[in-house]
Image 1 (tube, rainbow, N blue to C red):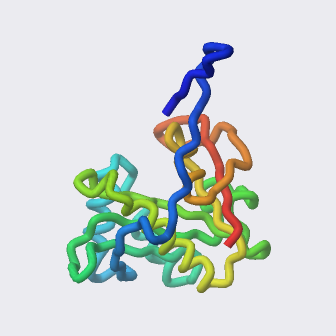
Image 2 (image 1 turned 30 degrees about the vertical axis):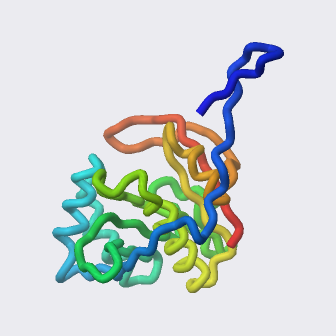
Length: 183
C-alpha cells in the first residue's frame, strides 16, 4: 500500500500492521511420506508452477533429517490446502547465509497455499508452524526468500538481510529478497 506525503508529494510505502498470534486461523498438518503422498506433493508443486522433478529427492532429504516437510489442512479435515517445509541446507545454491546446520539456521521453503484459501490468514499460520518445526529441531534462526512479494513477510516478524540475483534453473536469474527471523 502507498501513502502520499502531503509536504513532498512523494509516494511512501506504508507498513502493514504486524500480525498477532490471536489473529491467525487454526490449521492442522501432517508429515507426508513417500508411499502415500508423493503424488499429492507433485500435484501441489505443479499447481503453483514449480518444477515437480525434485519431489523424490525431497523425500530422501526428509528421511535423512535434512529437510522437514508438512502438508497443511483445515482443522478436523484431511483435505490439503497447502504445503511448506524447513531445509537445514541451501540445497540449490549452498548459501550458508540462507541455511547452515552448524549455525542452527534453517530456511522456510516451498510454501504453497491453494488460491481458494488465500487472503484468510493461513499463510501466517503456516509460517508459525514452520517456526515451531524449526524450534523443535533446535534451530535459532529461520530465513526465507522470494521475488516481488517477499517484503510482505516483514509483518510476520521477518527482516530483510539481503537482495541479490539468484539462479532459478530453467526460469533463469531473478532479483530475490532474503529475510530472516530469530526464533
